[in-house]
Length: 179
Image (cartoon, rainbow, N blue to C red; front, side):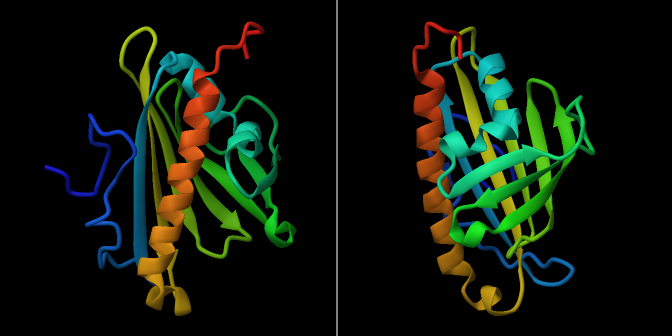
């Protein structure tokens, strides 16, 4: 049963639209949850390596101008980065809160976010040459954003679907150079 709480299998660009904007309470506001998943014709290891290196974000995420690691390698829980958006050069700082190599990475905004968010990106291998890539975005809405939660959620969902379509194409691109 689809309940909006975690990854489901077998869906291409599936979004928990009916449970997207539940009335779950956060400490200060209302939680908004968006989940998108897509199957990719690329090895899981390749997909995860690309997805977990947030320096690649500007290549496939709309509106991202730059992403720079602000902590030294190795990349692990506790690592930090800054992401600059095209809109007004807004900089948001993030911290990696969980990293399961080859499987998932979770980051949370720590400063500069208009909507405090936690993002979990996951990769599930479906064989030697394909995988399932998923993202769950949980944002805490407060103030006027609580009133606009349905529209904000739809906007974020659509944007995320477009971004993951670009990611899918990028990962499936045949590149003789091995990128």
